[in-house]
Structure formats: structure tokens, C-alpha cells
Image 1 (cartoon, rainbow, N blue to C red):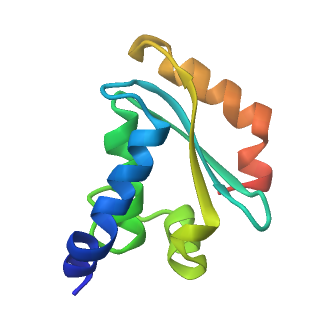
Image 2 (cartoon, helix red, strand yellow):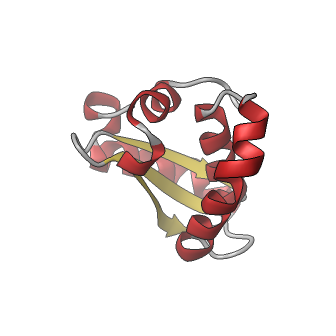
Image 3 (cartoon, rainbow, N blue to C red):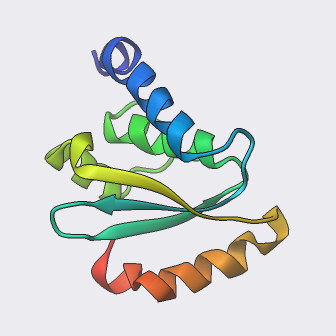
Amino acid sequence: MRKLIWTEYVQKLANDMLNNVVPQDCSGIYKITHLPDKKCYIGRAVSVRKRLTEHVKSSLGVGTIADQAVHHAMRDNGLHNFIFELVEECEKEKLPEREKFYINFFQSQTWGY
């Protein structure tokens, strides 16, 4: 049932949204923010578009990445209460360093997911 929901109702909307947010084949740091309370999740990916798609799929229970608190929040609060942002494009060699910087900058370990 969850795969059907993804395929029939969410996949096209998620792809349309990501087309407006993330350039094709982009590596970098991304941010997922819960709008009502501003809690955020900071992540890194060689392909930000693919990674954000996996987060959305995981929130529906059909993703291939580990189930995380941000996925539970998306599931409980609805995807419409979250924004997805590309914070910085960067080379894959710099991803760990830049992710650490933004986790500290946004204090996502203290005030986020």
C-alpha cells in the first residue's frame, strides 16, 4: 500500500519540488526543516536529489535509508509541513567537513533531528 501511495500520489510532486530546489547531479549539503517549530535536519550527499527523494520515501515507509527521527516527524506531521533546501553545493571530498560546519551552525543536534 505504501509503495502505491508513493508511486501514485507522492512521486511526481516530490520530483517537481526537487526540480525547483536542487540542480541535476548536484553534490552538497542539504537541510530539511519542519516549518511549525523550525527543527531541522542537516545532511550531505553526492547526489542531493536522490538523497532527498530517499528521505521522502522513508517517511512513507518505502525508502532504502535507515529510519530516522526526521522521517517519523514527516510521517506524523505531513510532508507539507517541511521544506527542503540545498544549503551548499560542494565537491564530494569536502562533504564531511561542510556537513559538520552546518550541523554546528544550525545547531541541529541540539534543536533538530
